[in-house]
Length: 230
Image 1 (cartoon, rainbow, N blue to C red):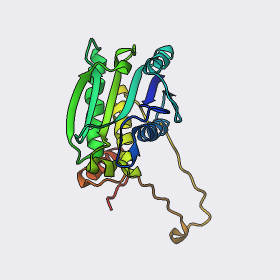
Image 2: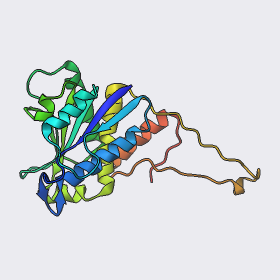
Image 3: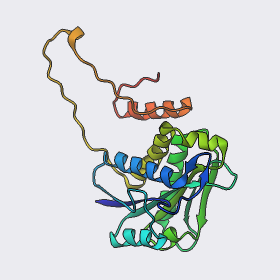
Image 4: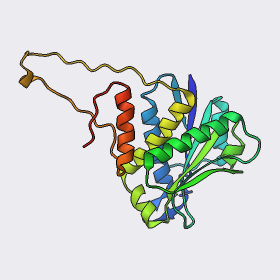
């Protein structure tokens, strides 16, 4: 069982960054909940949240929650500010395990693949409390800039937030070798007439960049799923 702690940055009286009609605390909670929901599709994963609603939690308490649970991985989700644009990720700037470095490499790459057409600000290190005080590999992601009009327009899109969450999940799945749960869809046929058969179609992604759509389509084809791009 892989224990993963998901930390939605800020909350309650601490709104985090503010800009373009958006609050960081709301965006981080939205993304974290999406990540948690997507991780339910994988075997052997236990998800622990530092918060699931709009409440203030001290930074030290967030780390304590993870340490007390003896988690295998800690992920803190944030939205940036300060006049820049794009995505960046952080691990602790002190002594870290080789696993933390490897996880950052994989997760950062998968997020960039998923969100597309976004400035890659790089993999960085910092002395953030939630990275310093956690006993397990920990990563903090800064998902675009709330005070950038272009970035904010993306952050106002639920589809884009899904892509952000999808990138995090793909990265975690690759880092830990997670496997999807087996699912079986069955339907009782009432007639052998093809015209009367019901067909159910499932959309698995929507991207503004066709290259990202093609990449996902290729992955699905390799797994044996018939795939089309529309």
